[in-house]
Length: 182
Image 1 (cartoon, rainbow, N blue to C red):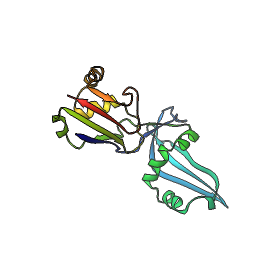
Image 2: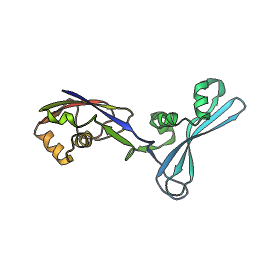
Image 3: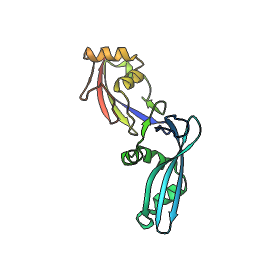
Image 4: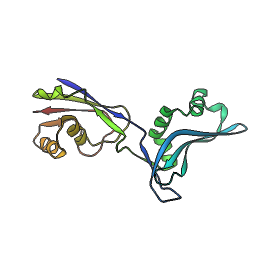
């Protein structure tokens, strides 16, 4: 029996970056943008607030771009403070690298298993789909989805009762499948 699980974001992840005011390392993206135009050039930043002191940091989306080279729908989304655009930009590796930031997804995602009726079968094929690029350990997903402890899942993997084409150690942020033999 094939079962589909989905790893879904519940909110924007925390931005890992050092605060210049209080030396905290966590910022919460506000979902708001600042756009500044100077003649034919335009700048845009995503604003993030320090979780400790509330200081605002600007994450550069683009700098000194010609206004005509920016798509009108992107400008509309920036001016409307589109939270979906903020999520897209936070996951963009170019934006993260430009601003030298990382993301902390702890508590910002959930696993949707579609219920627990699939645990009654002897062999379960599970397809795990990521709605966003959220790095999570597969052992944690399997434990949460099946209602087991992580140690129990590790034991099942070593016994060959949890099998996958990919390595189940480390973190993944892409779709994978596994088979659980009860």
